[in-house]
Image 1 (cartoon, rainbow, N blue to C red):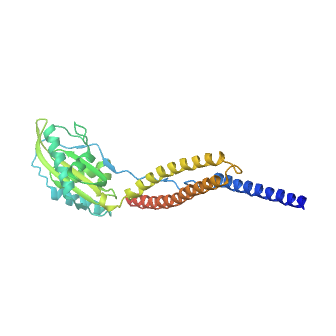
Image 2: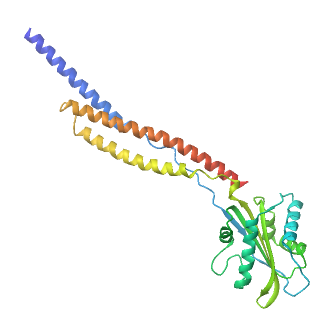
Image 3: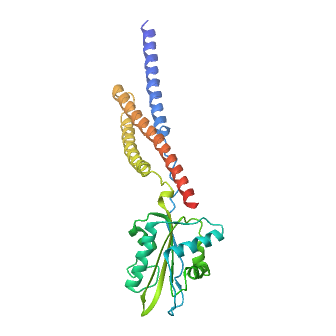
Length: 286
């Protein structure tokens, strides 16, 4: 009888040992494969705003009975666009203001260039005027052109200015013309500002982008916790203190579950953010 009881006791000990071993192997498996990785990364970039210029057009400086008007330059510009089957441009008051600021600055500071002596270009002037854009362009002309039609035709005869006038992406225009003294001569200066407002395209949700950044920081912290729990498990192998070991396994699994759940949520946010970027970039290309 004693031998039978001893045999049963030994058998039970063996079963218990196997049970502990199996539990530890399961934990090892969780440590190796239970932690997911963030596979869905942000691979797209947002297209930057652009501006287009060409070398300023210098016309005749000899004084003649020339006369230029804002409305006439806009009209002649749209006639050229219609001739080439392009959409007409709408006048935008902020682009008009940009053009006025440019022509005033050139006369005041005696320069004729897209970049002012203090380094301000077309984009800078547009921003000062409060015009938020996707794309902006500028044509400049100096000289005593006979009238609006002659001026616009002179721009059309210049490849770079012609390309600006006929650019498909533009939807709006602003113009300024002024006669004044430049380098001792009485001449006209003319400015065309072209643009497409930022409101045409909805940018990606900044909150989504920030959420992705924040989630990655949280994931890094949780990963540190998981590594700490792993070390605790390895230092408390089965057979020493069963209840403590079980507690550490539960803690480990809790953090792994948290980590994997946040991974899934973040991947969904990244998918949505990338989708918005794609739509935005396609809009900018129109």
